Amino acid sequence: MAPTELLIGSRWQASTGPGLTREVMSPFDGSPVGTVALAGPEDVDVALAAAVRGAAVWRRTPAHERMTILLRAAELADERASRIAGTISAESGKTITEATGEASRSGDLIRLAAFEGTQLYGETLPLDANRGTGFDKVGFTLRQPCGVVVAITPFNYPALLVLHKLAPALAAGNAVVLKPATSTPLTALELASCFVDAGIPEGVLSVLVGSGGVLGDLLVTDPRVRKISFTGSTATGEHIARVAGVKKLSLELGASCPVVVLPDADLELAASAVALGGYVNAGQVCISVQRVITHPSVTSDFLDALVPKVEAIRTGDPSSSETTMGTLITTAEAERVERAIAQAATDGARILTGGERDGAVVSPAVVADVDPDSPFSQQELFGPAVAVSSAADWESAIAQANGTAYGLGAGVFTSDVAGAIRAVREIDAGSVHINWTPLWRADLMPYGGLKGSGYGKEGPRAAVSEMTEVKTIVLHGRPW
Image (tube, rainbow, N blue to C red; front, side, top):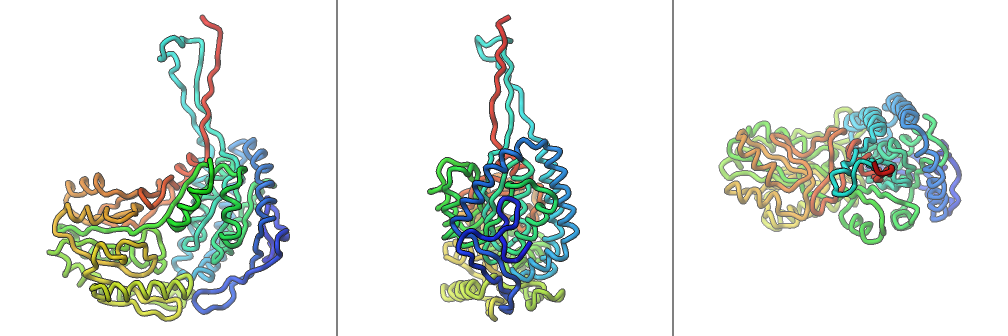
């Protein structure tokens, strides 16, 4: 891979578009991390044409052969994990500890998807249960790949969110055109190299780096594309849904994830979990804790336990093992988060700690007495701050938890089994965690949101299902 080449149709080649390049910069100190070629409109057409050809070959490749190639890619991801981690940290500002954890999951995620791609089961249809059909017919369903998949990924988990789309799509027999975030493209290219070096056939995989404004609509509106998998903002997801046409869509969008702390909760456990779940990756996680809803009888004790834990978080150089929280992705994003925290205070909330900015770093903040209807609760923050509000009873706590446009994840801390059961029944979120925060994900589990947080599920088994289609087959015999 040359740094100024595009991956089109599983082959590294020069851009056929404007021939421009982009320097990727560290959000921590502004130093250059690497250079990538930018794709233009012509490259989109070339990549999709290659994907159509590649899909025709890849879908006819036996599942065990596809799995063999993916397992080799997983081995390469393991062997290159240290380098991938360094790339993640350098281009995203994530701490090297967090980046190493992310990179180390890459190989196993590919293995999970490789297996699920061999499990495309159908079912028999009891046609004789229908009056007048008899035993002279046999029906069954057959699952097959969609064809061409467009995957669009954000910056915050540049390895895992790429692989949660790429690996299941490939495992199921699809060709993929991937558009990673322009701020973190190097990780995507590193991972794509693993598949290319493992022997992915010509045409099956392309990676196009460039502005969503230039490439986005060209990719999602093209009739050659059958499936779109997007992770990003709700506004962009809504735009894709409007313009995509007749295609299968998976959209993982915004969130404002709540955690409810009930009077019978283990407050030390809750505080420790929130101090982790609200600040990993500087809060730039869709399932980060944004809102904590406490019962008034425990609010003070909970805050007393939480604030020292948050103040112990160490910001600084992401490449240092001593740093426990890195930067936001850009200084502009840090300024936005700083303004949001300050506005919450203007609106009557209390900043108990944090909220100061130094470049792209915002010190981790705890903001108490937040109005549940304020923008600080209602809008996705995507930064290192947690809003704490109170609810006097269980009904109002549930109403607050459900009281935003989003529904991605939620957590409830309680020692009462009945309360836990009620929570999982009544909270409208794609995942509900009892005695932990929503910032927990096993790569194999179904993952996706309700309401404005999108639709469709990821996780290898769920994603393979989303990236395949079902045909009904009927064999007609002679009447008996």
